[in-house]
Amino acid sequence: MVKLKLKIGHKGQVVLPKIARETRLNLSYVIADPEEDDLTMRRGQGMGELLDWLRRSRKTIARLASSSA
Image (cartoon, rainbow, N blue to C red; front, side, top):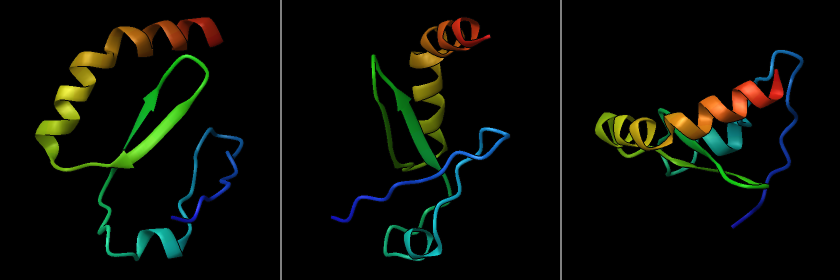
Protein backbone atom coordinates (compact mmCIF):
# COMPACT_ATOMS: atom_id res chain seq x y z
CA MET A 1 0.00 0.00 0.00
CA VAL A 2 1.25 3.46 -0.89
CA LYS A 3 1.18 6.10 1.83
CA LEU A 4 0.16 9.60 0.84
CA LYS A 5 1.25 12.83 2.48
CA LEU A 6 -1.72 15.20 2.29
CA LYS A 7 -1.63 18.94 2.83
CA ILE A 8 -4.20 20.53 5.12
CA GLY A 9 -5.56 23.74 3.59
CA HIS A 10 -6.17 27.01 5.42
CA LYS A 11 -9.82 26.00 6.00
CA GLY A 12 -8.73 22.69 7.56
CA GLN A 13 -9.68 20.70 4.47
CA VAL A 14 -7.79 17.71 3.12
CA VAL A 15 -8.05 16.85 -0.57
CA LEU A 16 -7.62 13.24 -1.59
CA PRO A 17 -5.62 13.04 -4.81
CA LYS A 18 -7.40 11.73 -7.90
CA ILE A 19 -5.31 8.57 -7.81
CA ALA A 20 -6.74 7.78 -4.34
CA ARG A 21 -10.34 8.66 -5.26
CA GLU A 22 -10.43 6.64 -8.46
CA THR A 23 -9.07 3.38 -7.11
CA ARG A 24 -11.00 0.20 -6.55
CA LEU A 25 -11.95 1.56 -3.11
CA ASN A 26 -14.87 3.47 -4.68
CA LEU A 27 -14.82 6.16 -1.99
CA SER A 28 -17.95 8.15 -1.26
CA TYR A 29 -16.77 9.17 2.20
CA VAL A 30 -14.03 8.32 4.67
CA ILE A 31 -13.99 7.99 8.44
CA ALA A 32 -11.30 9.97 10.23
CA ASP A 33 -10.65 8.43 13.64
CA PRO A 34 -8.76 10.78 15.99
CA GLU A 35 -6.65 9.02 18.60
CA GLU A 36 -4.15 10.15 21.20
CA ASP A 37 -1.40 11.43 18.87
CA ASP A 38 -2.67 10.09 15.55
CA LEU A 39 -5.44 10.33 12.99
CA THR A 40 -6.51 7.27 11.03
CA MET A 41 -8.58 7.56 7.86
CA ARG A 42 -10.41 4.60 6.40
CA ARG A 43 -13.06 3.92 3.82
CA GLY A 44 -16.65 4.19 5.03
CA GLN A 45 -18.80 1.12 4.50
CA GLY A 46 -22.23 2.67 4.76
CA MET A 47 -24.25 5.36 6.49
CA GLY A 48 -24.94 3.06 9.46
CA GLU A 49 -21.22 2.68 10.11
CA LEU A 50 -20.77 6.45 9.97
CA LEU A 51 -23.58 7.02 12.47
CA ASP A 52 -22.20 4.35 14.81
CA TRP A 53 -18.76 5.95 14.67
CA LEU A 54 -20.23 9.40 15.41
CA ARG A 55 -22.12 8.04 18.42
CA ARG A 56 -18.96 6.40 19.79
CA SER A 57 -16.66 9.36 19.08
CA ARG A 58 -18.71 12.48 19.78
CA LYS A 59 -17.31 13.09 23.28
CA THR A 60 -13.74 12.71 22.04
CA ILE A 61 -14.44 15.01 19.09
CA ALA A 62 -16.04 17.63 21.35
CA ARG A 63 -13.06 17.49 23.75
CA LEU A 64 -10.57 17.83 20.89
CA ALA A 65 -12.52 20.73 19.38
CA SER A 66 -12.72 22.60 22.70
CA SER A 67 -9.01 22.09 23.44
CA SER A 68 -7.98 23.51 20.05
CA ALA A 69 -10.15 26.64 20.41
